[in-house]
Amino acid sequence: MTHPSPPPTLAITCGDPAGIGPEVVLAAWARSQAHGVARLRVVAPVDLVNTALGATPGLPPLAVEAIGADDVRPSRADTVLVVEPAGRFAQVPRGCISAAGGAAAIAALETAFGLIRAGHAHAIVTGPLNKAAIHAAGHDVPGHTEWLARACGLPDAAASMMLWLPAAAGGSQGLGVVHATLHESLRGAVARLDTAEIIAAGRRLARVLPTLLGRPSRLAVAALNPHGGEGGLFGDEEPRLVAPAVEALAAEGFDVAGPLPADTLFLQASRGAFDGVVALYHDQGHIPVKLLGMHRAVNITLGLPVVRTSVAHGTAFDLVGTGRADASSMLAAIDVARRLAAAPEAVRAVGA
Image (cartoon, rainbow, N blue to C red; front, side):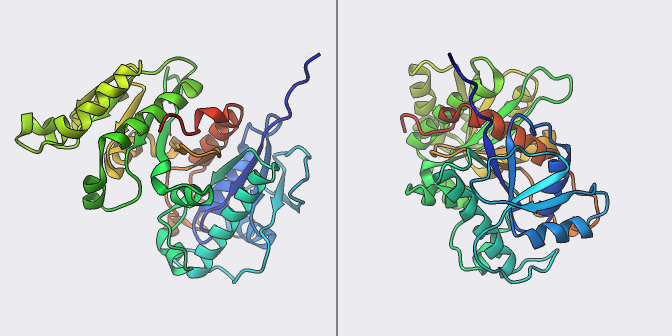
């Protein structure tokens, strides 16, 4: 006789508490359909959660209850279950960059990661960080993706950053974009780009997309230079670095095309020609996805032994306390984390 698996537990952090993270977490908690099929937990000081509730117009009345890390009760939309990070934290000024905000964000991430390692959670969902704030707090790390890679004892390059754009209402498919490089200057990304990284990113994208789409995926790899390099007139990276990666991915059995000029590739993908795109640097992938649907996009970390999703927007200090912050990305991040927690092998390292 088989028994149903217990619902996954999702550890949700607010990111930098000076930004809109606490507001979108609370709004999503009240609206999420994940209660009942997942156990949600907010990782934050209780005082911070209560402050956000009292200072944000439009949030529903929610009860707040601190619980232990090993508490397995189900979550409900009317009561926020909070696992508090250990220690005491300085008061965080709202709506601005501060070392206190950066310290609180990293402390929550450390606690959420600890829940994963202890078996008390199955996935992490993160709110938006401010990179200047975490540096002011003394943490020399570019963002969540790299912090998690290092916490797993791996180099930054072991992880890939993916943006997932769920299908719009009435749409038939979503779009996934994985990045061959991470948070770094454009000059640094181009200098570091190599064929092996492009192959690794393509493999990771091809591994996760069937879980999200429910079918095999069609991939494309973007060119680096304008017009795909114009036969070498605008650079040699396409034949030297990108085309060999595409050939290698095709030889492994993936349905993949490229290198294709990025200015038209994303238009084709948005119209259904491709399910996933390998972008070669941060803005090449981020700009089109955010234009197509910033408030429903989800950031997914690939290549690590943990499931982590996040909002695809920033801290938006100018919106703090106005009640105008959009929780759609957080809602989508919770839903995707729930789905990936049931198939964690989809995000883990493979052949790279």
